[in-house]
Image (cartoon, rainbow, N blue to C red; front, side, top):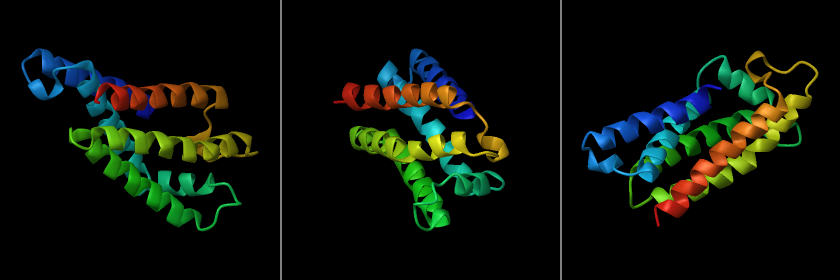
Amino acid sequence: MAPLLALLVGTIAARIAGWLGISYVGSWVSALAVGLAVMFVITGVAHFVSPLRTDLIAIVPPQLPKPGMLVTLTGVLELLGAVGLLIPATRVAAAVCLLGLMLAMFPANVYASRMPTPPKSMTTELSVRIAEEVVFLAAALVVAIGSV
């Protein structure tokens, strides 16, 4: 739920700044890019702090090698993507890459939903996770298409 709130609050705050004359966020698309960046900073940082890092490692499907390294890699990619969203010249590429990253990481959410005892921070129902994922994917798609 925190990532969804970060996306919404970040987007709305950026759009208000645009209405107040900050041209960088003078459109809904640019404000949404800022909201996505805020979201990915929060989720990216979660890959490196306890206890969330431990929980993220626990939900990496067992077929995948080196879960700790994968969590580190995806955290770095999320943080780099957040920076990319904030630079107009790289915004489209960042949005497309983050969209792909979200799709690639989603099986971990499915795996977590099927665990008999998932980590405490991963107990959200799969239907809620899917709904949030659709919102995140849609936001990335809007930024990618709207920034062209």
